[in-house]
Length: 69
Image (cartoon, rainbow, N blue to C red; front, side, top):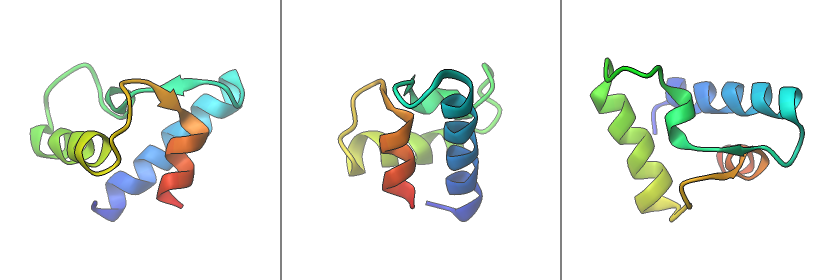
């Protein structure tokens, strides 16, 4: 996974945790706008989320962040 995407995911996880607490769930769609303006990046995130880590649709943001650190 490219470093810029990794940093974006960590940033979004941190924001969600700060706003809603340690139990907040997150989907890989949370890292993108509601537009398909970066399909390659979206597919990279989806592949990492689904194929490499076998994550459910919603996972705890703390878990996702820990996988990246």
